[in-house]
Length: 209
Image (cartoon, rainbow, N blue to C red):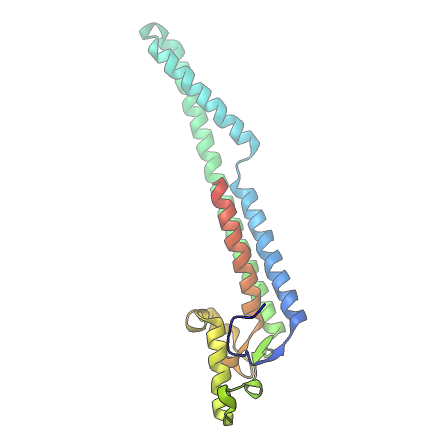
């Protein structure tokens, strides 16, 4: 089986163990965050039961109204019960919304803190780097040092496209790297794992909400 023709990747530094650890850390952190949020987004069984009882109460109110003036007392009683239950459920919904907002804010801060920790722990250490010394020009031409460096940088830019041209996060992740234009920092790997798990979670969540 032949491979699709492509330029040779001038791979230099490749910290496979660190990359694996960062991918696992990013995936687990995002999975834990999504699980916690799912738990607070999902309605408790007790609320679901009360909503079913409210629908039954609404049906009884409608049935009592259809009976006319002779059922006025019973209708008024049922309407008060319906109004009280709707008010109680609305209050519970507001509490759940506020609780969800609290957890979303807390998890966002924890994720930011973890990113800062990884940035400090891997400061100045490229987990993947394209080396100008491994650049293989077409036709066997000899490249100058400057040309080889530019080719390595363009290879990295193409490798990361379109991320290489957008996003402040990408620039932040390269702070402290010896050759920022031809290397990748730890944050990029960590964030990529979070993004993949997050997109999968979004798809699953869309099926249930």
